[in-house]
Length: 72
Image (tube, rainbow, N blue to C red; front, side, top):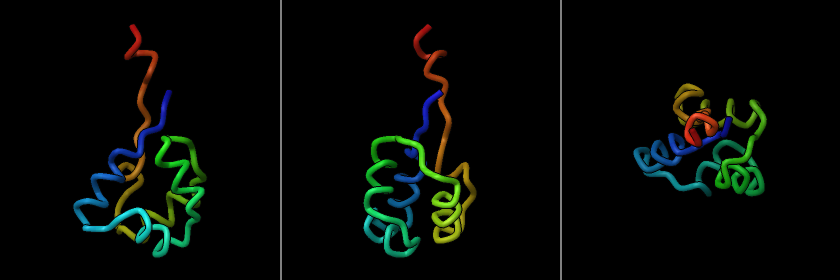
């Protein structure tokens, strides 16, 4: 299993926001944003803050992909 935040990056484009704007509005650190940029896991608290700022659902932010399926 792997985490992907591609949905979030697309949503930011649609809302004409950049990662820095999101960090400021959601009160999350640049280190946390760097983790997300590298598709690393972050806490649900962070995802909740992002969903609140963007007025969206968790599925609009993060996606779980099955890497084992892709390797077959």
